[in-house]
Image (tube, each protein chain N blue to C red):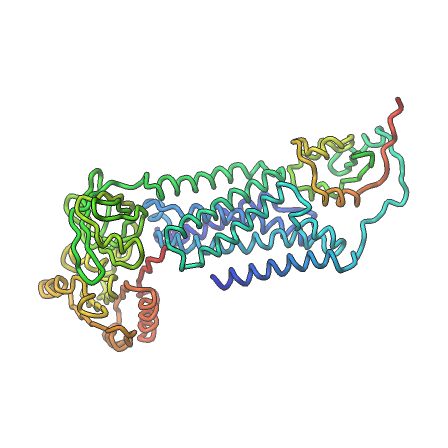
Length: 417
Length: 122
């Protein structure tokens, strides 16, 4: 089952790529023209896989090994498709180059062509611009998200380019699927048709620039396990402004009647607005996603939390006593940033399996290898890391130097751009 | 991944520029082979070449042997093959959907010319 889940995305991506290539496999053509056709169809199939992998459906995410894994493959498949599609017109033109250079340019140039080729160029330029935006992190998320939609339009224009060339037999089903995936994502997920309604019960400041918000379901609650995350969009209240867009937040506690609590750190425009959210404000919740602490082995464990990264561990601790010997290393800049530290200290006193080491690291990057237990202590440990990407990368390196193999290092980076 | 995007995009535009510059500055290595003799074919001659493997078409007064080109044509075979052995000017001019072929298709077509279609006697 695990193997099937592991292979699900690679096999799906391979099938989406090889299927159209096999259908359109050229015979008896020049090498460059054949390659041009093959990479064009491969790019088309990869883009279709890319659209499927952007869907945020909990069941689909579970089947494909998690939302983060889907997004990682979404990025790689998109990039591979882009490289293939860049090569497509160049190879077609390259086929004519040895015999007739004017003809080679005419094949490539949009100036001598009609709608079929213009749409191909439009699709290519939209892909180019959309990817440029994707890599630009200074753009506000809300603007970035809608510019990213331009990539979906690029796929549709690319498929119309094929239809106008007279290749409509396999393209209409692909076009239908692409439009379905795009529509599903926009209507169900971005506009929130798939979300469940919740209401804010309380919002408590738990550290500097961080609140813990309790949400009560107004209809059927989402199904959540400790350490999972949900996507939440807040509406505005009488004196506070929600930004209306879905952001991922790790659940910090689960209630008996479907209530959830989430930790929100002010990291951007939207999360800054959420700091002042009030009881009674409506919210929409999608999920849940992730499996960070859900399938832990019985071996002793090291948990390392950096700042806001404490929330998945907190949710697990709040869910009941631990079965495994666990050392929790909680790193934060200063006492003002140490959310929930008193509560966790009290848990460590009550739970014989939990040891807590809380460290205020200051503003400078700490020497992580000094903070981690010795290699001899870490033998046979499974390590779970949650925190800022730079800290997780540093911890992975430090643990690796202490002899911990990657199989025993678990982390989620919560990067969604 | 950002580096891959930047390098492939830059390479793409460099190659596009090279194709454009090549069409302007480099002499064509081999011009389309001119048809030596303008041989005249009747409609009966044309009709004898009506299969995908032996496919002639009459377009705008010229007769073209498109047997070698058919596998390269981008549309479905069933769109183009029925025109083998026939006068296909209207189909060529409209692509059967009211859209003309691009100029480069005209240039490509010239490579396959084998003669002229005999004028109809009134």
